[in-house]
Image 1 (cartoon, helix red, strand yellow):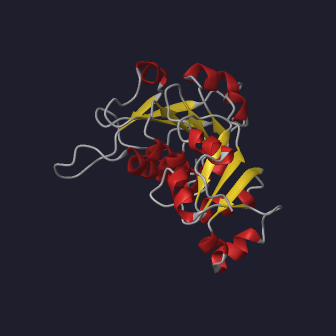
Image 2: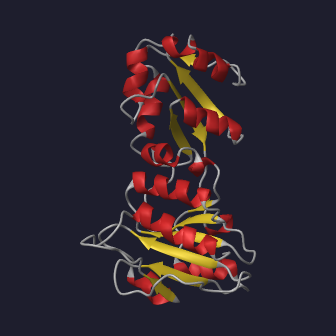
Length: 257
């Protein structure tokens, strides 16, 4: 049982909250279970005694390849970025690569995020993208890191499963998808056309979304073949980026993209 906050393992885990790299802090039994389902290697699993003795704890521990570290409950809670890790957290090795992660085949929709810096939005967008069958989640320069604890929580496991590329410019993605020149659809709050079927089914589509407030960068605006604006009723001027993405992806899927 670990009872000191000066334990070296606990110090290393606290550092994960301040940096983003190839390790990811998975908070709560749901995310840890999703990581096991995805076959991700878990470097360490930490549990509190109350969780280990619960029915949910016993089910999760039975799936682990080796016994977890037992940690005093208050110490475990202090490690988490969330208000409460619900008695369980894990460290997984989760390297993130560049544009080579993107499947270069024809057809399908790739979700491109342009400067989305809020980790919660990034995670929620991954969840929406997976639910609506995007082929990959492509993060442009300046986006939040997909291994941020808040992004992982908001994704409910989608960031553990989706093909994700980081630090990708529009030119990088165009080169990756050659010889199939993709159609870029920029989702804008104002000034675009109504959503409509943009291309033949064999043509890859890139749906580009910017951060709330700044919107899309000049580089993405220049690359866009189409600009869509979702029609809104009443005094509402714009939607949360995740809601806008869900509506646009649903429209693309409805038209067979």
